[in-house]
Length: 254
Image 1 (cartoon, rainbow, N blue to C red):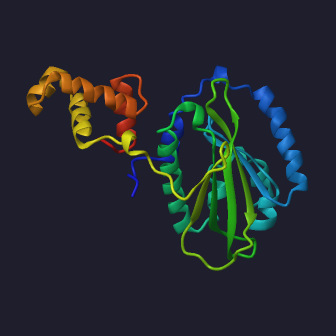
Image 2 (spheres, rainbow, N blue to C red):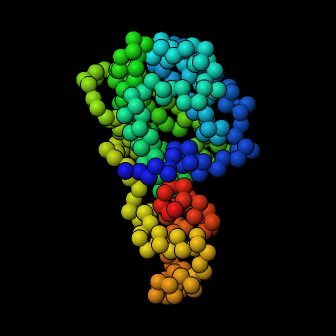
Image 3 (cartoon, rainbow, N blue to C red):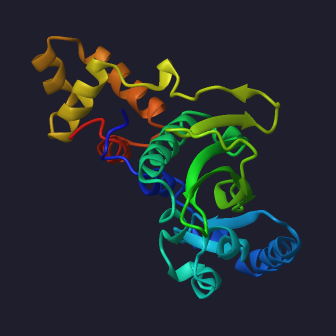
């Protein structure tokens, strides 16, 4: 179970996208292409702006298939979590868990590989007739900022050809660079903090110096320095303050 202190929004905030690195003049033209395509596609298409933390676009098919108010769909940028409201509540909870797990996984990777993965979900949504139907939702990064960080996410949702009743979300992750299909994703063992590392990070947060930590734990200051170096590497942090903030947001320390 992922700690409930972690949220997808907190993980995405790690991108730390700078307004100077996103070009909305360019993206407005790209959005027009997606809008045009959505008019001839039978799929439900949406985009998410990671920098602004909101939906950027949703196609009219969400109104046709799922009964959304067309006016809401046209003003999706102001509607918050509109697209989630017709999701089965059990599936919505599990989808958030998967998104958090995926976020932890990609942030354990070198930056150049983080945008290579597409997630495919089968989940339940209320249709326009107020019945739960199985849908397939595909999500991946389609636009990066000038520094290669995930900026715009594309989602494509279709009614699943498999309408056998299910009680949980099915998830597949595909590496779009290599074609590898991952049955599950998890943070590699070498990116997970050990008990000792969590203990040291907690003491650092409390204000203890390395020498004081060494004395308190009856270990050498050299060992403390090694642990601190490993903590920064595993959390992909530039300094101990950033490491503490990441660990606190992820529920690793209190």
